[in-house]
Image 1 (tube, rainbow, N blue to C red):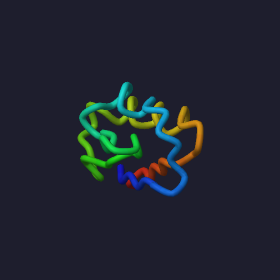
Image 2: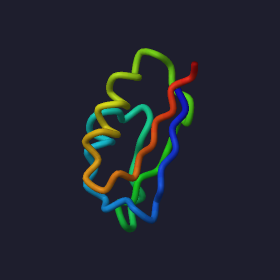
Image 3: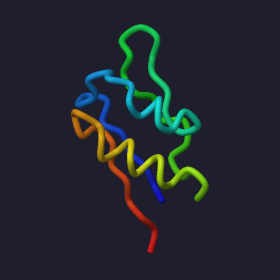
Length: 66
């Protein structure tokens, strides 16, 4: 799994941080998403997929490795 985030699309809702704090954080000054781990371990894949699908601004992209 590889993750990318589009900071320009991020609205700072924070759902990603709540679902996968090992992978996502937010900047203090504007709450924009910060990607902590672009290729996380399998133990958080389900949470990352949920964060991406629930992102209100579609700022998270997940690419599954074949």
